[in-house]
Image (cartoon, rainbow, N blue to C red):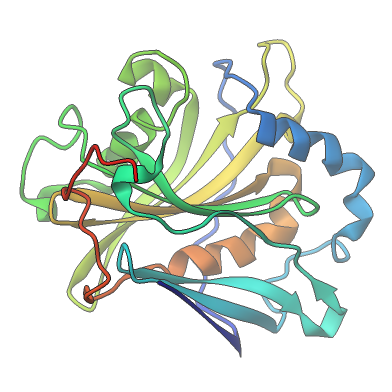
Amino acid sequence: MVVLSPSLLLLPTLPSFSVASKPTSPNVLWRRDLLLLALSSSLSTHFPSSGCLAAEDVRMTSLVDEINAYTYSYPVELPSKKFLFKWVESRKPERYSSAAPLSPDARLRIVSERVDIVDNLIISVSIGPPNVQFLKSKDKKTWAAKDVADSVLSDKSALRVTSSQRMSESSVLDAHASEIDGELYWYYEYLVRKSPTKSAQEANLYRHYVASTAEREGYLYSLSASTLSMEWTKMGPLLEQTVASFRLLPPTDNYVPPYKDPWRFW
């Protein structure tokens, strides 16, 4: 069951960091990202005027996924600019066993996703077990934020490649941890190259991500939000608010743990 509730608020933002370098490894150009890239120049006038949006009053809507027991808020309107986001729910919340895999081994799976194609925005939630190559200890209090980021990103690829090759597709800019209401959350910021060749170095061939990960019952729950790098100044602060709002919820009767019937697809 999914619950949506609108509100008008300004959530605390995550720290912003400048991009020191760009990743140099090629990556497959996903059809979704190709469409977003193609629209980026022709539809750029749909964005609010240039400049940071962090100081704007923003109307947010909260999503509650009772199947996987988490919640987050995302922007729907900037009233002062009369600007509306154009979200489409591309993947409705579903149980881990029937969710779309992000890699051939089906460890990491997307359990929900929404896309604003016009404004080049993607918000997705994925669930998967930790990668023991990076998170060797079972005590999550000992996990470094960079290792958590590497664990998630190593499984986040549609290519049949090794974990180290998948990780090289991404460039982590920052990673840190925070304890909220007794629960550890790891936050990280990274770039992913979306160009099919090494020669193309334009900024609009990268996606800029922020993400938050929490652990429950041996699985990592991760929310990521992204846009094209050239639009980060405009949309980045709002995506940071979305990531900062991500919380695990106490399970209800509708909760389906990831380990229940892991290979059931109906």
